[in-house]
Length: 244
Image 1 (tube, rainbow, N blue to C red):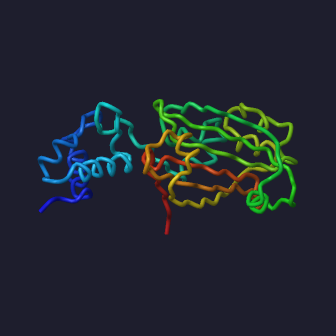
Image 2: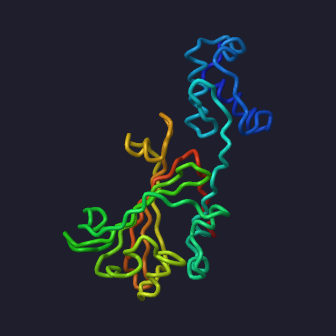
Image 3: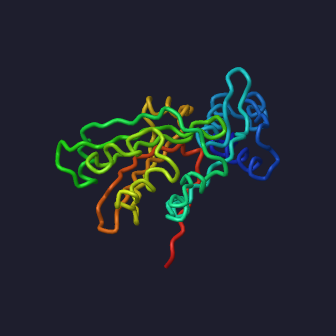
């Protein structure tokens, strides 16, 4: 009885996880899978696409499908938002990867707050925000886009309104302004990207993204930043450490 595409993908995934197939190895091609499993070419193609969509493999035009060499980033929210990190002038990214990622496509500007953002920041309709948008690249791969919104009346004319916010980033500068973030909330959801988002992150068709919206609050419970992030789901492991 012919195997399904999912079963073939499961077999190949097991070979990757066991180390039989290592990063950079070429996966069996469609003709080989057709012979081995007795399936149609379309089923073999679907099996390989499943591994690509899961972030385990990459398809190279005219060459084949290969085990992905990129090592997933472990994102530990508790570590990256710790005050001990940004107050010491470190990037919160240093909690995820040993080497600071390349930040590209940086844009900083002032505009009217979108409705949802103004609601999250407790701003009046039409109030202005400073927007900081950027893309993060690790090992020559775009892995995340992020857009931060901060009340313009609070950060206008400060380093936060410049491309380079200085050591410790925006949170260190907010602390200097007397608006130190002391707690955060994050909402996550997985979804399929739009065409523009797929292009921005260099995603193959069928690869999902993780959307995270983080709000930073001061000790007085004032929201001072909304950060909307879009992560390549195949590039990340999300970890949360909770105490009972």
